Amino acid sequence: MENVIEKAAVKRFLAARDNLGVKGDIFVLAESARTALEAAASLNIEVGQIASSLIFKLPNASPLLIITSGRHRVDTKLVARTLGVEDLGRVDADYVKDKSGYSIGGVSPLGWISKPEIILIDEALNDYDVVWAAAGHPYAVYPTSYAELIECTGAKPMVIGD
Picture 1 (cartoon, rainbow, N blue to C red):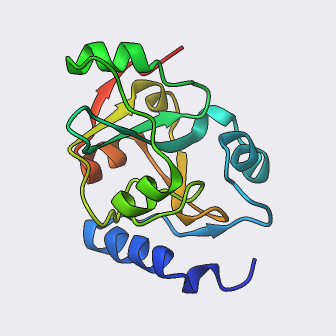
Picture 2: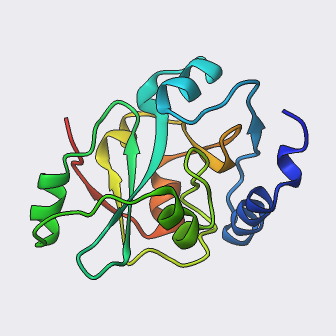
């Protein structure tokens, strides 16, 4: 896809990446990576290597970012219990864009316009030397690692699902 690197959201990701000292370069996919399966197929990697950024709403209406392995579904009841809240609110595309600055399918764990109150990371991502995360656009991804994601985001590791 042409001009992905010129998109404002991708430029915001690049600025955050550079500011944080992340070394992974953006890889522009030939096809959309709106889902973990699509991204894994495009990169010819295991779906578990995809670090998906999923957003939920906490009871106080602030965002919760969960960086999860593509091989898992988030167990929202488990996460809610762990956080000591009744439940996690579902969000729509407008909420995602308003809080993160990214459109669904391209939500990066870096470069948010308003930092999430809580960031969790799926311990399953530690099973891989290299994981891939969105870089601000559904066609843009970058390589990183579990340790680097924790360092750059301050995410708290936990078991997210099965």
